[in-house]
Image 1: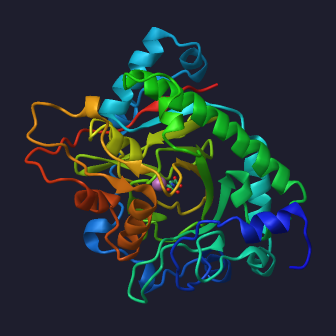
Image 2 (image 1 turned 90 degrees about the vertical axis):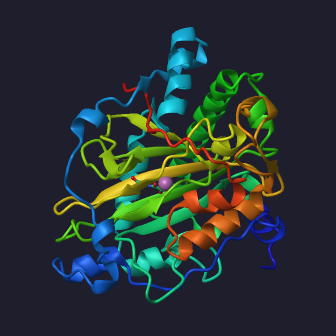
Image 3 (image 1 turned 135 degrees about the vertical axis):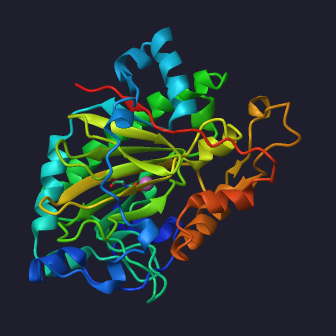
Length: 380
Ligand code: OGA
Ligand code: NI
């Protein structure tokens, strides 16, 4: 306070959106450091939520791979593949090289808890280092710690939550997220095209294209079959872009009643359609439910970037996406800010699936198309 640097002005004066308060819970990484074998009751899932180790390799092999370069050149074939992928699955992977980010984050999470806690979340917000979405003492907890930052528009940044170790972390986050923003704009252009819109329409419908970064740290767990790294949810974003480690599994998507692993492809990004596109497309493009599991011997770090509209934007199905053979459209109009906060509350009440928030938004109709949902973007 008292200073008039841009940074302080940005932090204090910009009406930075706040999110939902979360209760303090143990740091999972620290718990594992102290006792590698202990798995407290608060983390042990009910039978039906427990991750099963059944692996559906044949399905995960079907995830389409789309080349971002070809997409940005507007190649017909790639656009078709993207269109298919958005309909049939919900995830895809884009190609980018992002080693700095992985190394810097690994170094950050390796710090002593005391160091990391210098950037810990405020009790009434979601930005910073800690645990989001905890509201009750009874709630089952995720086996993970997280760092969440609002990145774009840059006037919303809260610099006090940006780690200062490693020294270059800020610049690295900056470089990574500006790359993600670029890829996102590219993808929004292509998704606009396949939705039958002019290329710039989806982007402009955001008013301001917001980006939040969530860095997840999943410590090893001596009993990975009893806990979840992140509870099942769908993303409240327009699209999400995920960077994961090359050789460690964790992400799974729901396909019918099964959980299908999304195997990492080196130097690729996993992209998934979020709730906003599901609503704009009146359910034609799916925001797939997903979760993360943990590993016994390997900790895992993932980077999820969420691209979403300004709070005040009203979202509703686009006229031409509404299926005229159905008696009514599947979603009603909501303000994005209301939708986001309502979804967060539901998620915190243990009604994990944003699917449920969508049910409230959706005008009930007899048919709900629930297709399989994954797609991938290009490797190397
Ligand atoms: C998320 C998410 C999956 C992962 O952060 O929203 O779904 O693999 N993460 O970490
Ligand atoms: Ni997610």
